[in-house]
Image (cartoon, rainbow, N blue to C red; front, side):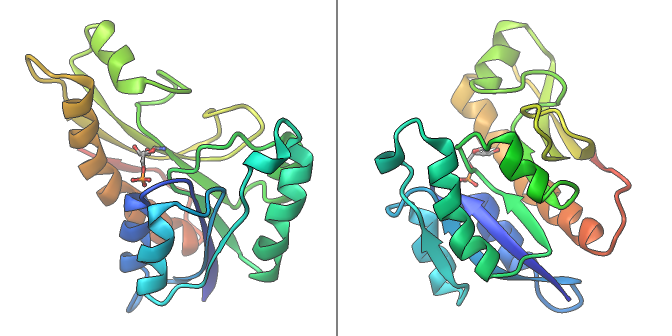
Length: 196
Ligand code: GRF
């Protein structure tokens, strides 16, 4: 049974989708939900499902990412995860931190990578006049939002779409895609999951 740690910054809807799916014949179980914000709404939701939680506030560390990460590593390493899922985790991790977990750290990004790495993905898709958008699960590497693809889901861009409307449509697909990818990845299979 694989041990999974989930890193969140906010409400944790992706984290919840993953935790709820890790049951029955799933090859993995959640062992920790960790946040860079002690007030992140997802922490209470994880605790309510019986998953251990921890928080390391990044703000007191200012620009000192290494010092923040040294603290973040304490609860993380103590949980002995086999796999780490970034699920709405909004801090950029240093290459040194990423190298520690290379090949076993996943992230979900709300665009069809390699299109629109970074922020404001839905507005950028609308501004470009794209007819479809979506989300991507990828392995985390030192280059932001650029690691090997593990899954993608596509949605249509509809007439009159706002960034919020598109984000809501994509989020539904995120909650389907990420659990499907983790189930396959935890079984040792890196074949990309492609949802229509
Ligand atoms: C999601 O769209 C995710 O792709 C992005 O942050 C958003 C919030 O996710 N990284 P969650 O509800 O906190 O999981």
